[in-house]
Image 1 (cartoon, one colour):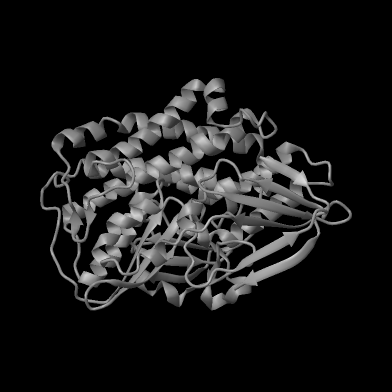
Image 2 (image 1 turned 90 degrees about the horizontal axis):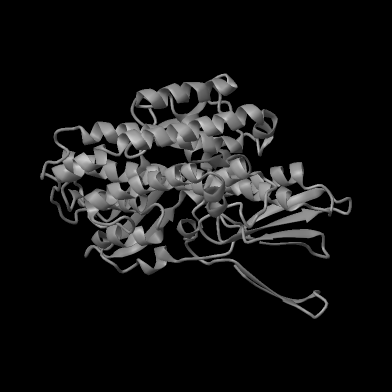
Length: 481
C-alpha cells in the first residue's frame, strides 16, 4: 500500500486493500494539518453495457455473470427477470425454488468472504497490527480454526451453485422461464447435510461481532455515523426479501417515503450524476434531488427498511438490531458487518426450508415463451444491495440499450462520506500512522464494494489528463466530458 503525504498536503492510499477491484483514496489536509476533504476514486472502467448492444437479449443471463466472480447469480437473476418481462412469462414453481437456492447460496458465499476473510483481520488481529499479516493469511496463523470455518462456509455457498448449475462461479443454467437443470435427490441431501455446520459458523461470527461491539462501543457508534436515506426490497408485508419483491425507500428517521415500488419503475425514483474524480457515478433519490437524496443499499439498508425477517433465528437478531436506536434506522457504517451476519443466518435458514420442499427436485423447471415486448427490467438484492438490469431491444430481439444500476454505485456517495468522516476522526496532522489509514480503508470495506460490477456508466466518460514537469507542477491539462 502506497501511503504518502505529497507536497500539496494530500495523503494517498493506493490501492485500497481487501476489496474486490481497484481503487484509491485521497485525503486533503489543510495548512493546520486537519482533514479538509477525502475522496474515494474508482480507477477501473469496464463497458459491459456498451458491448452487449447488438446481442440477443436471451444471451444476457449467460453473459452478465461474467461481470463478477463474487455475485454472478445476482446478475444472472436480474438479467433473466428483464428477459422474462420482454417475453411476458413467469418461471415455474420449482424453477423459482432453484433460483432462490442459487441466490441464497451466493449470499452465504459472499457474506462469508466479506466478514471472515476481508474484514475480521481488523477485529481479531488489531487495526494497528502488521499490515503484511493483517489479512486471511495472518488470520489463519492466529486463529486457524476460525479461518478454516470461514473458508468452509464460503465453500458451502459455492457448492449450492455447483450442485444445481454445474459451476461455482460464472454460473450457467438460469434461463428465461426457470432453470436449465433440475436438482437431484443426491444433491439435495448433500446440501442439507451442510446446514448445521453453516449455522454454527454463522453464530460464531455473530458472537464475535457482538462481543466487539460491547468492548468497543464508542468506536463502533462513532465510525462513519451519519444519516442517509435507505433502499431495499421487501415482501408484501414489509418482510426482508432478497430474491423477488418490491422496493421501499425510508428516510433517516425510518419514515417510509415510498413503498411497494415495482422495480420496472426504478427510474421514476433514482437518478445518477457523474463526478469528476471517479468512474463511479453518484445516484440519488430523485424526489429529493441531488443534494439531499443520497441513499444507501446493502445489508444495513435492507434491515433498516424491513419490518421483519422471514425466519425465526434471524428475526431474533433483527429485533436486537432494531432496538439499538429505538426502532429507527441505525446509521453507523460499522453496523454493516452485524447486519451482514444477520442476513447470512436468515439465508441459511431459508435454504433449509427450500431444500425440504418436496417439489424442489421436480423436473418441471422451465416455462416457454417468445419475444413479445421491446423492454424489460429485472432486479434482485445482490449481497451488496439492490441491483437493476434494464434492456431495450429491436423487433428482432437484439439489444439496443443496456443499463446496469449496481449496488456499489448506489453506495458511492455514502462511501465518499464515510472515508471523510473516518479520516476526520483518525487522521490528525502530517505524522499519520498506518493504522489510522487502515481505519479509513475499513470504512470502504464495511460496504464490501464490488468495483468491477459498478463501473458501467452510460454515455461519455469524463477524463482528465494532467502533465507534470520534473518538479511535480502541472503544466498542461486535457479534459473530456
